[in-house]
Amino acid sequence: MGKKMKLIILVASALVALCAVAVAGTTPAVSPFKVNYDLFKLYPSLIVYEKSKAEFTEPETCGGCHDDKYKEWNGSLHSMAFIDPVYQGELNKAVKSVGHEISRQCEGCHSPAGVVTGEIKGPGLVGLSAVAKAGVSCDICHSIVALNHDKTPTKEPENGSFVINPGKDGKDGAVLVKNGPLKPTDACGGGFHECRQTEFHEKADLCASCHQVYHYDKHFPIEATYNEWKHSPYSQQGIHCQDCHMVATDTFVKVADSMTKPERKDYRHYFNGANYLLYYLGSQAAQKAGDKEQSDRLMHQYDMAVKRLQNAAGLEIEPIYRKGTLAEVRVRVKNLRAGHNLPTSLTNIRQMWLEVVAKNEKGEVVLSTGSLNANGSMATDARIFNSDGMGSDMHYSDHPWIITAFSRHETIPPKGYKDVYFGIPTPNGSSKLTIEAKLRYRQAEQEIAEALLKDVPKGIDLAKDYGLTEIPKLPVVDMVSLKRDVSATK
Image (cartoon, rainbow, N blue to C red; front, side):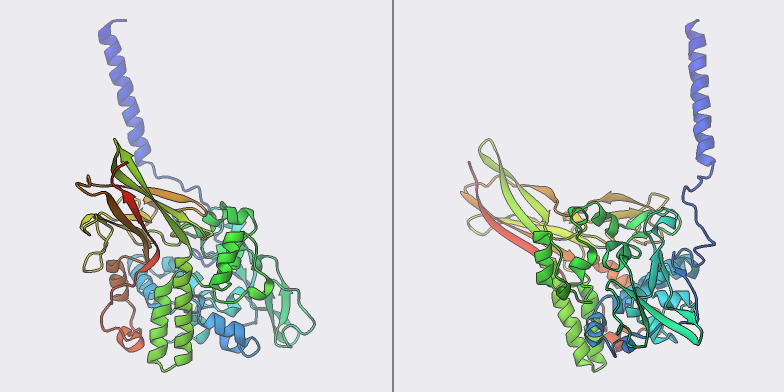
């Protein structure tokens, strides 16, 4: 075969291949995730409501018999899940962008009762019942009768994949039935409700329903807290979410260090995590309303959240020499006690970063990185641990309803670590340098928080309800800091 003929064949083959690629590129992709709309009637929320004559109970009613548990819950993030102004700002943006049907995915976990009863029809709090505004109340968790993780589009926990029913129909009307981990006694419920024991109420599977958030259409895991735990040493040792988040901070530290479960008497309904900002805002609102007891309760939760963050991680500093001269420092960031990645949740929003400063013997700064700018924005040189979200168009986005992939995902797994290297300028005339590293955390970029709080729906008055006449600088928590003197030469 001549060279000319071979060339013609090669060109023809290339054209065929290009045409095939072009055709494939124009053929709509078929999603592998099938939705059972007959089962999930509230889709994209995956809650299944087994409706009966029984109605949901206000948490204050539960407090009549369970006063201590009610007070613990009343200062928790679960109690503020729907009224949270940051969440309401995000929800308002979502509805404007994709409509209420899509945003129902969020509402299903932030106010399940409001969604299954059809009471919530959009952002805002105006006209809603106490049950709807109570968010993740006592009667939400204790009315969950089953989990549907194996029936979701991904066959994994996601977007509220539980079955809920506050009771059943009896001969003389509705009968309330409450579910929990303890074996019922004859006196359980005091005649107000029946009791039923379940296994999943003390397991991470329950929490997974709402702490595993997938994109409503592409089913990309935007929040993968449960999966992070599932593949961790904590899961292998039988340490569940409740064992760390339903106990005091000192107990949480003991659990993480010993990898043993708490004693039954240690459990509380705190559900304490890293969202210290919401505790602070809630305390301000309670103070404005003249409820000092509630304000103090929320500030106690705030202190717990900060202390929890300050016990989660560790740092190491090691010098690196080349040809006998200090060239770099290695800062190791260790996830010591979080049973999920650091950070977790909406990692495209959370910010955990290193601030490193090196000074010579005269106190002169020879290296500075990771400091916040004067307006609260993150420095471009900061070494940050979080994610960058992007939509199907591969453009950056921080909106959960747009994100279908991460262009960058860098978090630290449980009991794992990340090493970061910083170049050091040649220390002229210095015999040693002092290196100080801080691991810092805040819940969002200043600009994002401002945008969300400025877009709260009508009926939420930040000045009247929270005493906010302007958006303040977001508080930053120093999780851990370490200072070490290193020799300039070796």
